[in-house]
Length: 432
Image 1 (cartoon, rainbow, N blue to C red):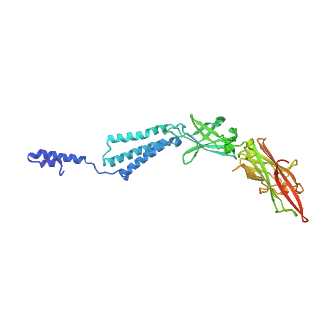
Image 2: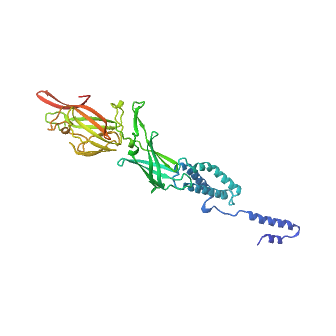
Image 3: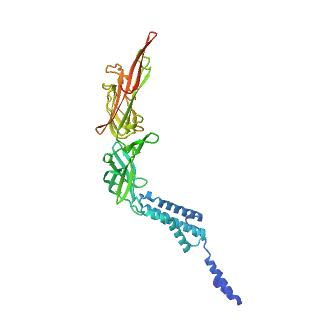
C-alpha cells in the first residue's frame, strides 16, 4: 500500500537506511494503536449512560430494600437481578466512552466496577434472599355485618427472590384477642383472583366462631376525667409451609356487647296548634336513646360507646304505674340497621350507631310523637301526671341493660281581669 512499510524500505538509501526503516515501522505501529472513533450504542451519550447506570443501580437497591414488603410479587427477584445487570452494563459503557475515549474496558476497570457494585448491593441482597415473614401477606380485613363474616386477602410467594407463588390449598388459621386464642382451624383458600399486584385468594371467617368480647372496652377514666376507651383487637394469623402472617381486624365492627342504655324525653312547649283557651301547650314529644358500652360509675355524665352488634330495644312511655301510652313495637337492630313493625306509628327503618351511639325514635317518618299518641288516653284526652320512660336492651335472649327516667306533664290555669289562661309544661324530674 502507498506509504506502507515495504514502500518506505524501498526509499531507504545511504547510511541513514536503517534509521529510516525504524522510523517507518514506528509510524505503522503507532497508527495501528490509535483508537477507532466510535460512539455509545442505542444513541446514548456518555453522560446519559452514566446517569442511566446509576439510576438503574439505585432502583435495584431500592427494590431489594423493599423486598420484605414486596415478596408477594411472583419472581420479583429476577426483576431486581435484571436491573442490577443492566446498571453494570450501562456503567461499563460510560467507562468505555467517557473515560477510555472508545477503547475497550480494561480488566482492571471491570474489576473495579464489579467490586464496587458488590460492595453496594451485597448486604441488602442477602437481606432480600429470605424474608422473616416468608411470602405471606394478609390485608384488607373487612367485616360484612349483613353476612356476619370477615374476609381477608391472602397473597403468597415462596419467600425466596426467585421462587414461585403458592397456588392454593388448606391453610392453618387462628384468631387471638389479648394473646388468648379464641378460634383455630383449617380453611381452604383458592388463589383464583387477581389484581394489579398479582394473584390472591379470599379467606372468610364467621364472626360467631371467634367472637369472645368487644374489641373496644372501657377502663376507668383518663387524667382529664373522660372515660378511658381501650382497644382489644382481634388478630388473624395464617400459617403456610411454616411461614406465618398476621392481620389485625377493625375494632369498631367487632365491638358487639351491649351493656348500657340511656334515654331522654323532651317536650316542645309553644303556642302552635293549642286547644282553645291555651296560651301554651306541648306541641310534640321527642324521645331519644343511646345504646352501647358504658361504665356504671360514669353513667350519669356519659353516654354509651357505640357498638355494631345484634340486639333488641324495647321502649315504653306512659303514666308511671300504667301501661305505655305509646304502642311502640320492639326495635330489632343488626349492625347499624334498625327496623320495627307497626304500632301506634307505622313500621319503619333507621340507622343506629353509624356515627354515635345516639338516635331518635321515629313515628310515621317523623322524629317526634304527637301529644295525641304520647300524652293522651285511649279516648284522646290529655293525661296529666308523672310519666316514666323506660328503655330495655336484650341480646342473645338476655336482658343486658335497662334505664328509666321520669317527667312531669302538668296543666296550669290562672285568671286575670276575668280571663282564664291555661298552659302546659313538660319537665324532667328525679322520680314520680
